Image (cartoon, rainbow, N blue to C red; front, side, top):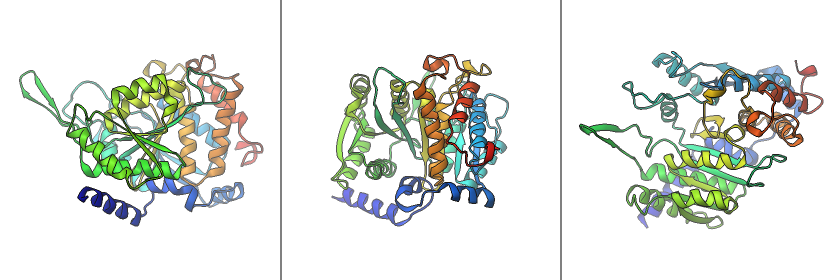
Length: 390
């Protein structure tokens, strides 16, 4: 009873303190007006929305170029403030990291590529990715895994959402050598953060009209850590009687996703499990190149690819698939209440894929990243928001 009272207190506290960022993105359709084409034109005259852009490593810069080209053609009222940050390209410095953080805190919204993390230990356990998430408290990572019409995979007509807590768990950067040849890695699970991500998942399901939330865990083995996470999910579930709640052990979840992914709707899980399931689920609908993702705090929203991968082997070859990044950019525009532009870009991407004439190698085609980008630009709604797309 005391635990349930604690959850109710947390619920009241979160609801009573509306802020931009995570909750703003979830309640946009309920409390904000969509921006019509004429409104978008007025905003373009008055000033563009500032957004932090971090291209990252691998094919990130190529994908960001595709986004900028499509935004330019669609006259999207967004001004990108680019910051280059990398741990593998001699761009690693505390000053650059601070600049990125400052920009993201000021703009509240960012579009980022994958910042590759080297395997070698160089005195700092936390990668730049992890430090950004912690500094901004980007606790909720959301990956919408949805089949693309016209692109057939082993499983079609999939539509599921993976919600991952990404500020604690196994990725807490707490490792040490307790004795020669013995490394201890600590997994941190807290009631506060477990309740928070559980409430986020149920809020998401409620506001998106979804029917079921599945908590993924390994409480049969990690009885205290995952046991606490599972307990928090069960307590929060009692506050949402209209949402069906199930639990599933992580190893069984992996098998069920491959055998029968249609049973899932919204899945919520700790950090490491979410990292693995994101990539597994992306493979069900076409791979890392087609699934968008986003991360939220109470104040900030960061948009990125759902399956984070630098695709180092594709760098400079003009073969990267910009679909996931373009869809992430579209989701970002929806978060900014630019519904017209968001729909225009998402519809253009889906149209190109459905027609099937222009597909990158990862989708079984021969088109270049440039070819795909040009096809999306050609498919943008006519007439474009600005004359000639200039």
